[in-house]
Image (cartoon, rainbow, N blue to C red; front, side, top):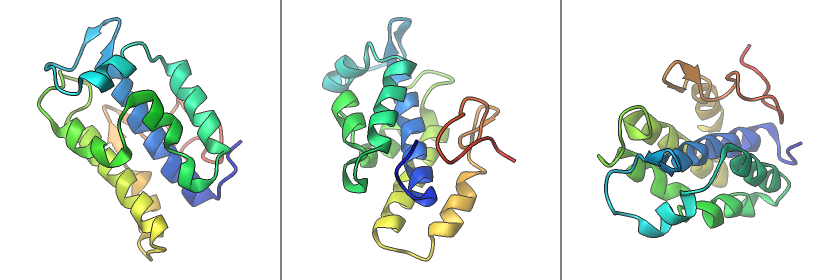
Length: 154
């Protein structure tokens, strides 16, 4: 169970989804990153599985807000602010990463910043987060999520 308020939980979950997509860049099924950029990160992500990412999320959800991204950064070598540009790089093969994930990562980063600055945009960003999609699934409230305060999309 997440120890953060609902809005921060949304932000953390968006970040988790971005990091979960990131692990698909290089796995035992073959590299989906098509260049040798980010060798350190590729090595870290090479063997990450979904259960590893869920473990990072579960760990992070109990940490103080300023530290919640640390398990993801330590596990992948990427900071949240790196992800929008990284997903936009042409090194991603079809159906993984790419522009859609660059937009999702930017939204997570914008929400994170709005929360840090107590911006009045927070509520709008959360509402918009429910409309973010990749392929045919919603990023928040899709069929893969069953925990925390988010639940399924209504």
